[in-house]
Length: 415
Image (cartoon, rainbow, N blue to C red; front, side):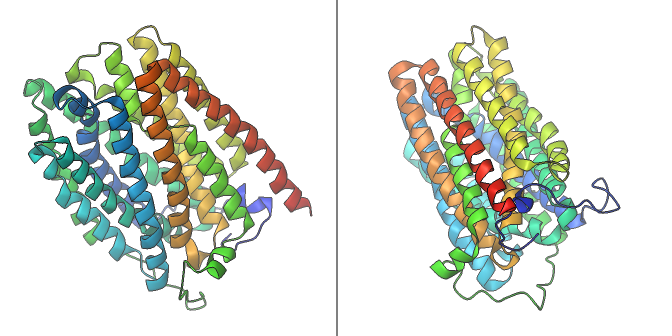
């Protein structure tokens, strides 16, 4: 459903076509999934090692890591607002998506060359600008390509392929760290290769669908009248997502938690491998399931998984329990991230999807900045336990708020 209606139907389920959800996902969605996979492979080869590299090699604090991660993600989120709106104004998505992937690829060589934290901050900042430019247009492009009855499955598939790259990358990093005797720069250099393959693939394999002639032309996507057209249901979904993001923080703290239990440097990337494996294996099935059942119920299950992950990571006594906590964290991502993207696609008008994804990412990115900075400060003041217990507290508050919003949406449907 592409309109901005306020009923519960637009945020629960779509009618499944006769072909079912196992067939018919367009080639463009698959191609965008593999583009994401290659770029995530490159990024996670670097990011799996970056927090430990900053703390152990460059001597930064956990608070600094939190601030850097938060600012980086907030930068991406702010950029997404403008790139999403621009894609609506142009009526074109692929150009901006390719530009964003290209910028990220060309900044990857900065990481092995960086002599100080300031250089790493600059590289992370530019890399996230690239992510910001591509994010909203790419998600809107998936929504444009995917048929309505396969939208949940399509977003789940793209997210799964993206996350496959997120665990292949750390696995490669582990092997390279072992082969090079913990030589970070070598790993960072090799990470450049899949980034450029990603850019080549989107240029060659992704075809943008023609804009329907009956679709309204958007002249000023960020004007308040256009933002009002997004509809109340859309803004409720964004509110839930923003509060939910306060309950979680950068995965850098999962890496630091494993290091605090004495995990060897060469094995640190296994943390992201476990998380991403759980994420990738759950995202596509949950996406298909969301085309048939109430999506807010699945979102609530994802919050419960996050709550369990926080509790386990707060009180973990050995590395096995750390692994269980990281596994639960990955499952919560699989239950929530593709689902939130699907809800945004369904509650926003088709001609404003780029803007819708941009505003969604601005709100959640700002929340992630706050969450990561608070997490880093708590880590320095109280240690890992305080950080994860704070996350658990925010999760409980979010879960309570989700049921309130679900009631409001049901009331609108009955009105």
